[in-house]
View 1 (cartoon, rainbow, N blue to C red):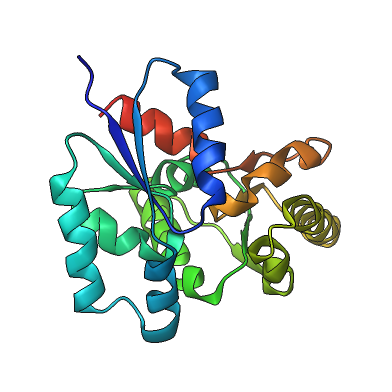
View 2: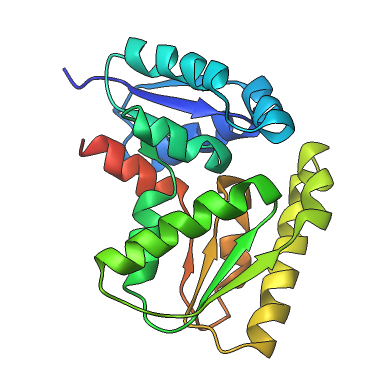
Length: 206
């Protein structure tokens, strides 16, 4: 029997979205989902310190099968402990897209880990390209308040504006919380990459 996939979230909304994603691509898969909003709070206030790393390690080591960390802020630490970073498969795809990459992010704490992972993916693919960061933190309070449709619409609007004014080869929605904006961007004429689907498929094949 296939081992369950453990998901580490830092926002409750991801539980339902990943269950729906599982139902679409692998309905037979069992998900064990942990929501730790307190971990993101700690990381944003104090950084990813050893005490937090120890808590993450305990959860990962107790998991019976593959683990996916869906939090971009915690992804690097979780990957070092054996988990799959939600954004790693997406960054690898972006590195092969060609042309400047628009990297959209909504939390300052995600910028450095996302950029470092993208740089690593570009090096592995032996590609050099411009990365255009687009910070949309002004919309994050909408997500935190549960106003997901409004948040998603604002993300899509900001991306369309940025693409209209820049030479862009592809767009990365660097956090799972932004993935729902992708269907609103199908008219861009550019690839819009999101992390949840690619990460879940990676876990299924682990």
